[in-house]
Length: 247
Image (cartoon, rainbow, N blue to C red; front, side):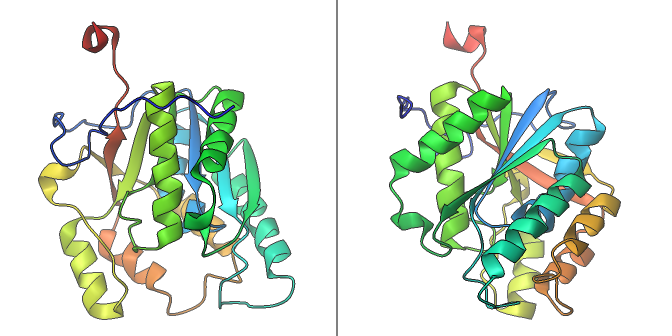
């Protein structure tokens, strides 16, 4: 059954009430990661997933597509190859489980949003998720699949009253990447960032290596990691209400 969606405004949206930046990650026992493609969990969220695991959180990964439309490592069996890469990478990051859907890579916006939301809600309930971890609502790189995956997570987070945290870039890092690569990276100003986390990228790099079809030399991925160093930024897209807030 599709969850009944509450007309809440995510806290990261224009006009939403800002919260003070937090010193670290929320104390979530179980985290559901919602991404569009195999490798998003490693290239984008890997260090943050590792940080949650190191804090004792159980992490489950839901991926909407098999990444079959990638022009890197293109072959008739690319969907199977990338499914295997996802499983190995998630395991390297310490994830408890992975769920891989088979929606069309590059066309996630065309999928019925009720179906996407039901898949996220079902995974969240099955995992007992305290919160959802996603890409920023800009998609970070502007990829429409990233945007659609995050939008679904935000709708479900509001419906289930669980937090949705988004990985984002600083405006300066995004601007430098745009200049150097031409990829439409999007970043956030300092006052839009809620959490800044010092990370260890060791496991992230191991997970990236589990995606040999995509982690090619010269990829913008490596420059992004170089520019960011050991810091990752997050912001709330949905902050769960407390009893006091709902009173």
